[in-house]
Amino acid sequence: MNGADVIIAGWVHAKRDLGGKKFLLVRDKDGIIQVVISKEQKELAEIFHKLTLESTVSVVGKVRVDSRAPGGCEIVPTNIVVHSLAKTPLPLDVSGKVPADIDTRFRERILDLRRDESRAIFKILSVALRAIREELYSMGFIEVFTPKIVAAATEGGASLFPVAYFGREAYLAQSPQLYKELLAGAFERVFEIAPAWRAEESDTPYHLSEFISVDVEMAFANYEGAMNVLERVVARAVKEVKEVATKELRVLSYEPPELKLPIKRVTYMDALRILAEAGEKVDLGEDLSTPHLRKLSDLIEEDVYFIVDWPDKARPFYTMPKNDGVFSESFDFVWNYLEIASGSTRVHKKDLLVKRLEERGLNPENFDFFLKWFDYGMPPHAGWGMGLARLGLMLTGAKNVRELTAFPRDKRRLVP
RNA sequence: GCCGCGGUAGUAUAGCCCGGCCUAGUAUGCGGGCCUGUCGAGCCCGUGACCCGGGUUCAAAUCCCGGCCGCGGCGCCA
Image (cartoon, rainbow, N blue to C red; front, side, top):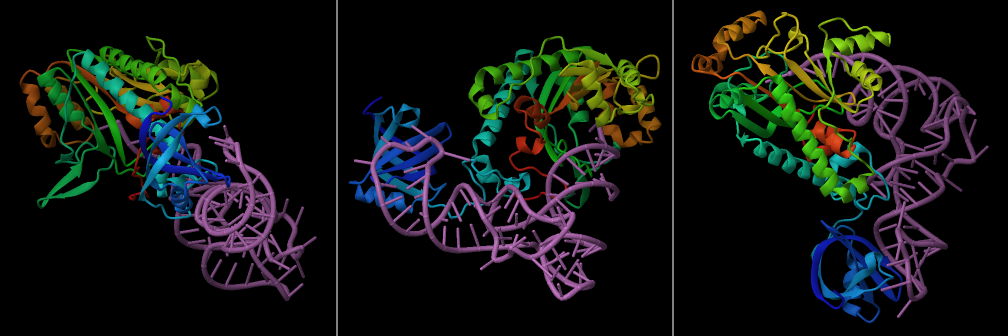
């Protein structure tokens, strides 16, 4: 290595001028290397002088092993090419010496993304994404894509973003739900990793108008099978991140929770009982609020758990009810107090789907594109959907899903 | 949308409670100077800010009212 000819390219991370020696710290995706310019190198000293932080450069030179250099080696340059001179002062300190508010950071997002912590977060997310795909492939799933422009706002619930579609009413898809079910009716095991949109008022660190949803749907399975797949996928993601992204986890001073399979299943009724014993009343059939979940996670002393068998009335029409008529074959996957994924056995009988649509005040005719195929051999099936950024919170220790989103879209942010 | 907290140089903060001693302090950045090895280099000099509008007062960064913006909690949310 010592004496090797190299060309490095990157960003000016820092400059130190000690008079006789000038030190240029150049950062690329893998780290920071020191370039040393001595007094005699007049032309390079001149270039050094006019370089500003975050300018892009290529440095041609030789490697020199030197214990005085950070990391034990440095580059003695023969030439420095300036690709782009950055304006000063920077609107955000990339080196991390001076912190920035989260609002400033998203306004200056590209500079923010050059920070160590930001790069670590996206590296971890990418490692997780690959692990998720590989685990699903290994279980016989194929990756599919469903339409993101959809016809009807007929499902109720979350609000949709309208789009102008050749003079017709159309919307951005809030979920691939119905289409992934249909695809499971052809391919058995499908998954999709794609954006979804919700025009909600939600103003929290866990909601975005545009988010990446990891969706799985599998034929000839019920919610138990879906949970088994989910916990394997999440465990694989955690394992890969711990093994592959050690440097990044160190940058973030974070260790993801250990997952021991099978992950604990707590029924909705048990959750209510546990909360009641702690003096927290929840009416039967109610969804659990964030404060309730915070309390519950403290009480059951598990980082990660499933809440299963939710009241049917708290779940959408395609969810399979239990025979008791009160509960359903459904689950939420929870990390601390945050719902990361949810899923269920789906109804595969057309008459029951029609009945459930009507009970919810929805018009079955609007669902013909979906219901029609239940006349032609729809298999029993189950699946789940997971918020990728929410999983990312668990993997990185970040406090806001925006941290896991390069350019987050929320109620107020439409740029950058 | 509700509740709480906040808005001071490019960035991040101190000052506000208890108005005058603020000609607004500090860090970082930026400009200049010194220094042959720094490692968040150091030292010296300089640069740059009180969100907007109204009010109270002899006097407002500081107190009051309204607005705008932000953060957190909640709500909403297949």
